[in-house]
Length: 138
Image (cartoon, rainbow, N blue to C red; front, side, top):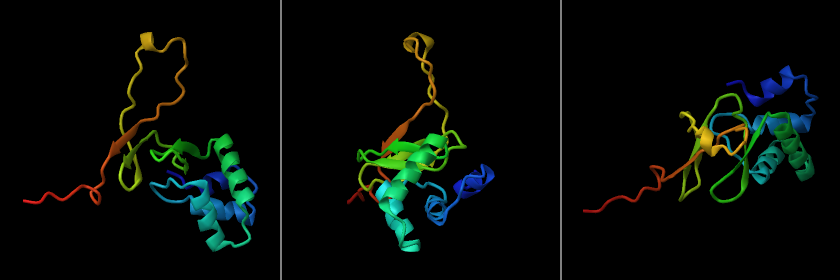
């Protein structure tokens, strides 16, 4: 998977200092940050980044197809830079940890499509991570 910053450079997207920092904050595997988390992390690197710049940049990147906007089990929108690999999400229902998982897409039978054109499949596996599974006492 190419990092977001590399993909943006390849598209010759104008990378201001603020946009560069936002793209850097979204780097790595299993990144699913809220807009506020992107803002706080960006601001720690570049204090002059404004909340409006972060929100506008995130919206633009979603519009360009460079980020997926996913709704977390907590109801908040999160931004996923992994747009190159077809994947789903594994989410801990207790702590909220969210990971990308590669799994086959479920198929929607033709008789159940009701004339719709399926564009994307999103599956969220809700589970408990190893840190949140209750320890059995004997």
